Amino acid sequence: MVVRPVSREEHREEPVAGEVEEENWTGVSVRPGDNLALIFKRMGLSAGELQRILALGDKALRLRHLMPGEKLRFLIDDQGLAGLVYEPSPTYRLHLRRAGQEYTIREETREPERRLVERSGIIDDSLFLSAQAAGLSDNLIMQLTEIFGWDIDFALDIRKGDSYAVVFEELWLDGRKFGDGRILAARFTNQGHGYQALRYTDPKGYTDYYDPEGHSLRKAFLRTPVKFSRISSRFNLKRRHPILNRIRAHKGVDYAAPIGTPVKATGDGKVVFAGGKGGYGKVVIIQHGGVYSTLYGHLHRFARGIRRGKRVRQGQVIAYVGKSGLATGPHLHYEFRVNGVHKDPLKVRLPRARPLPRDYLTDFRAKTAPLLARLEQIDGGRRVAALH
Figure 1 (cartoon, helix red, strand yellow):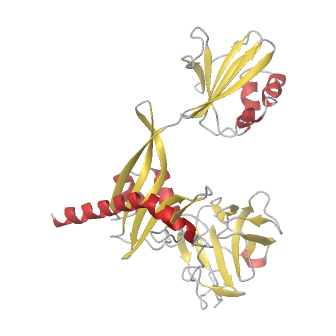
Figure 2 (tube, one colour):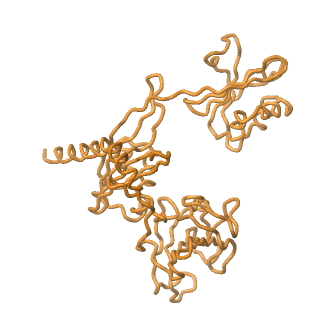
């Protein structure tokens, strides 16, 4: 029988629901950099046992992708591993038990109760502070910025007095809230201009966000390739270069961000260059069809698999912020070109994605009308409160 001390991450736990109460289970928290092989080694289990488990089929493959903080429970006897439970979320649990000389594996899933909740606020200092005060989690705040990220540059455009309203799902199990679901409807007013978003799944199962007329909020390009970064230098054809100390056109926008910040492709396309390019340092250039291209410069490193000829999708991480080439500090240099001509990424008119087909509009309006009504109720309540 394996005997070893129990650490903070590895401790005795109550028996798993449905297991024999007399059995002694040991709980393990996944550490940064961990994988199942390292955990098995710490637990004194053999590589042979690990291979037998991973050979159990598709269900066992989930154990190859452990995330820091996730929990595992082990049952160990004098023959080795007798049981394993993996519970990455309150709604999913993977059970493994030894039966004779073989292992059996089964999944357990639970459907949470989804409660619709409304939150709204007015920005006084920053969106994050306002939204947190209104009761939105970091996850919901990021969802909100992603929904409206095609129209609003959240690093540049936000002003005091901007407002928002959100209808979203709370997830509950056994009378307890354990997380937030998706935003179903949202409204954001930025510098006096209002934007609305309604989540809709079409008859073919495709889900996206649309305005009340059925136009997709998604555009062919994201407005910014990094999240919540400060703009350190704007598009300026007469800028004095900070290192060369002479007038040199700045044909893009610089986003100051820490080294290692993920850089995302702003649109679908094909990588036509990934490598060193003089003062730009490490660069990725993406061609988006025959008209548009984007450049990402001063990179620290490329994401795995990014090379010439690689096709990428909008929002895919292609590289990480650095300070390679002629750079005074870590930042991303981003350029947007139309037919080879440099355009200001902050002002260029971005092409829209396709709207909903006409055949879907009746279904769309029927399913989103209740959500739109809830947004209007939130706004109506705000106006009444303002009068008093």
